[in-house]
Image (tube, rainbow, N blue to C red; front, side, top):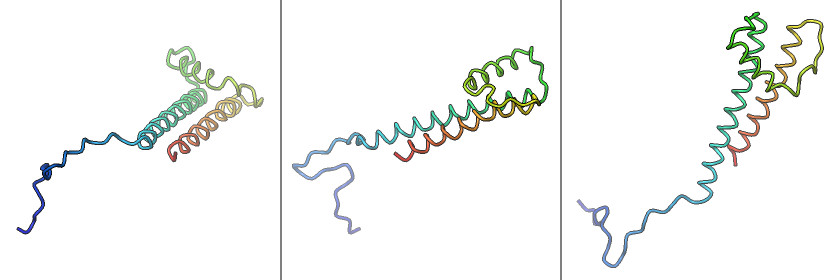
Length: 121
């Protein structure tokens, strides 16, 4: 045993132990940015799921008087208010697909883009 280092936790005479250092500001900011990126990513995914679910329920001719279907429809209408009747087709299914699919794609692209940008910061 040729190890001449003092035992772990012991300090040489006259040296005081250094207190643990708090995380640096940059490390804290990176953690905050990652959490914000995850939150934005998740919100965009949830919005797209509601819009996609409404498209699916409509195309499968779900009972629109059902409470769950009403909730999904109301949420999808709220999320896609800005894109209502962008596309006016004679085929109702295609109109629903485009008018609710467009915001779903935009939410995914913008949400994931912002999350990726924050994640790199």
